[in-house]
Length: 166
Image 1 (cartoon, rainbow, N blue to C red):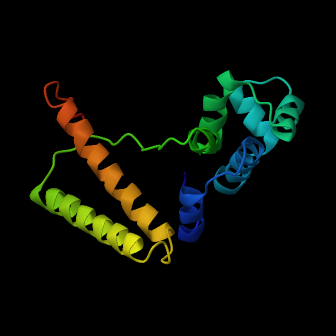
Image 2 (tube, one colour):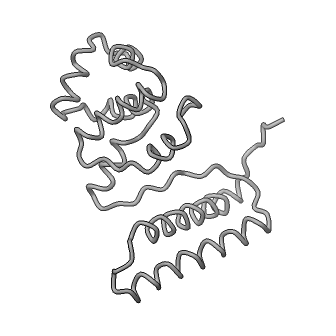
């Protein structure tokens, strides 16, 4: 995403979960217009399509060629179709973290995040589901992303990446 979005809209798009394939395709298009100021014609051109009407047809019908989904999402700047596919198959998506050296503060934050997630989970079960599930799910997702980050770092430890940063 680019800097054109306000913080509230950036948060909206980060949390948005499409309800269906057509919804995911339409919201990708909406995100491209809002965040990147792209029309459907420009999206089609950036995807290498000769006819933007085909893109309109695919979005309207929800029958989008699977091989073009990654390109469409890259042009639009958001992966809503992938999110919908994962949710539809009852799968969890976790962004692939970028590797960086872990510091003591990172490990403390990992432990703190775990404790907060477990506390919210415990409170949720104690209330027999009376408490809202959204904060529990958000805490668990955040913790899983943090663990995935450390998993990626440890798995690549034997083959360290070159640091090209100045």
